[in-house]
Length: 95
Image (tube, rainbow, N blue to C red):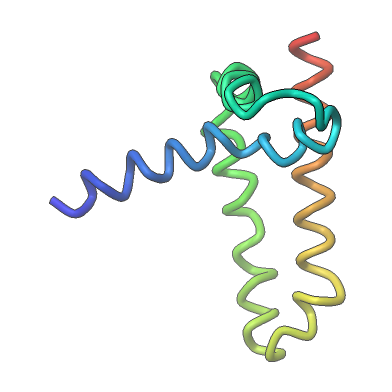
């Protein structure tokens, strides 16, 4: 039964994944506009974003083994830039 709370939470997480990028691109938009635009951008792309995040599991395990050194120096910036590239791709596709 606990999956009934976890799975919708994961879906909503990916639905609103692009909000920080939208706000960085245009700080003048309202909160409601950012939520709506993120939902629109992620429509049909949530599964791909989830798989993209799963591809980083090995890097995060390596980061844990090195007590976070690999994470700070490589994994976190790489993951952030990958998400920024995903945002740009979604923007270009939905323009």
